Structure formats: structure tokens, C-alpha cells
Length: 339
Image (cartoon, rainbow, N blue to C red; front, side):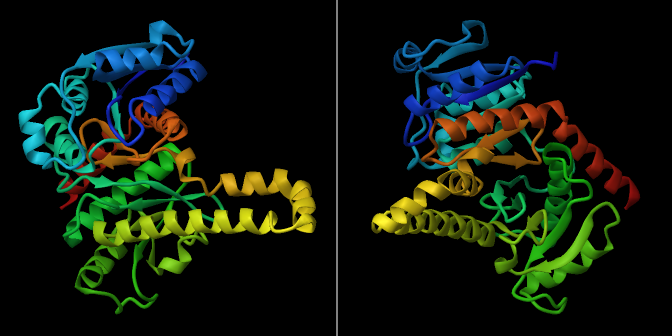
């Protein structure tokens, strides 16, 4: 039997907490025997939600807290002042090795600040990065960074490329993943100052498969497996991706329901269409791991529902069982020795 992975889930984080968060945790624990879930949250509402389900009681526990960090709160002040919040308590459990991973749909700022201040960076990592999987024509790509470092340096992007390659190879299973840097053209001389400075550094690396620049329109076609950029660009790509995907799905469904003829056609193509649209549902890919920390922290969407929470927990299991943090640490240490 595989090792048991202990995942702490912030039951109070996000727009749909604690209901959808608890539901996702129950679904995950009920589906796999290699998961033990710790729910951090206000005791009464979390336990009330748990009463709605039958679940393996020996693999879900509640660690009660007395505070909740709200989305609008200043992150640094909230982390410092709310020591008994669901986020701080969960991150502290990871730091103390009482848990393998932490999942939250709560305040992104608080999770980012807390991840670095409480869990801590891997030695040699300059900046951790948020790295969600995004759907492509042939599978998925890792977008790194999408929210942690708006003002990044070239050395940060080089580390993002290395961490992203390790993640895609060992968690997603892509051998020698292709790495591309987001640019406004394919030519090496194009781009802003950051891209121009980073491109030759990536080109010199012998431990990643760097394929050059990638334009945004090539990302959905699966032109590379690791999409490297600073967080401002990455967040714009991610939000446009999500918004356009939602509109297209609405348009397709609306078109199929337009009249009797299209409704009849919809009946015939429904199984194939359902499977196709499912591949562009971001919730099935889980959340965005914060790569570069000593322990695993995963940030899900603030609007996350049970399915995304469930898949984020599965994501934690794969990450932990593949020892990704240790592999990143070894790769960075090796790079420092060679310099």
C-alpha cells in the first residue's frame, strides 16, 4: 500500500466555505485510502457540514480554530495577528512536519505570505512561484508564475523553468518537458528587457529542454509543457484562459439549444461533447502549487467547489509521493555547486 499522505485543508477559505470545501475533502478521503485529511476551521460549522456525509472517520479529522482570515485583510498583518486562523494553523502543521501539504481557497495574499514566512523557502530558491496546470489541445501545460512575483528578475525565471520541469516530469509524467518563455514573437531578439535577459540564460541550461519563445496564441495548441513568465503576464494569461473558456462553453451550449434541429443534434453528440468540454474544465486539474517551498502549499480558486478541492488533494498526494520538494532542492543545490 502507498504511504499515507496527510493533507491539511483550510475549511474556512473561499466563497463556498465551509460547505463545498468539506464536501471535496469527504469525496477525496472516500475515494482513496492513501489520504488522511485534516480540516482546519471553526468547530461548529465544519462539524455540521461533516454530519451530512458518510465518510471514513479515521481518515478525516477536525482541528478547530478560533479565527478566519478574510480575503480583504492585509496579508502580512493578518498572518501576524491571527495565529489561530485556519490558514496559519494549517501552514504551521506543514512546517512542523505534522502534515505533508496544505490546501486553501482563501486569501491568495495570506497564503503566499504565510507560505514563505511559515513554511519557508527551499535553500537557494530566490522566489517561490504559483504554478497551475492549464488545459491544452493535447493535455496540459504548467503556467509558472501566475501570481506570486509581479516584478521578477531573470534569475527567478530561470529557477521557475527548472522547478516547472521537475514538476511536469515527475507529477504529470512528461519525459523531458518542453520549456518556453512567453514572448511577443518567436525571434530571440524580441521581447521586453526581462525576456531578452532571460532567454540566453535558459538557452545555456543543459538540465531543461528549452524550446525558445512561445506566443500566447500557441499555448492552447500545446506548443510547450512549461510556460515561463513573470506573474503579471501569467495572471493575465490565466484569467483570459478561464474567461474565454467559460464563454465558449456557454456559447456552444446555447447554440445546441437554439431550435429543435440543434437539440436533436445535441442528443447525438452529447457523450463526445461532454468529454471534450470536460478537458477544458480547470477544476479537474486541482489548484496551483507554490513551488519552491520546503513543504507543499496549494492555492485553489476563491470560487472553488468540491471537485476542485478534491482534485487539489489528489494533486498533493502525487506531489508528496514523488518527493518534488526534495528533487527541487537537489536540482538547486547541484546548480550552486556548478557555479
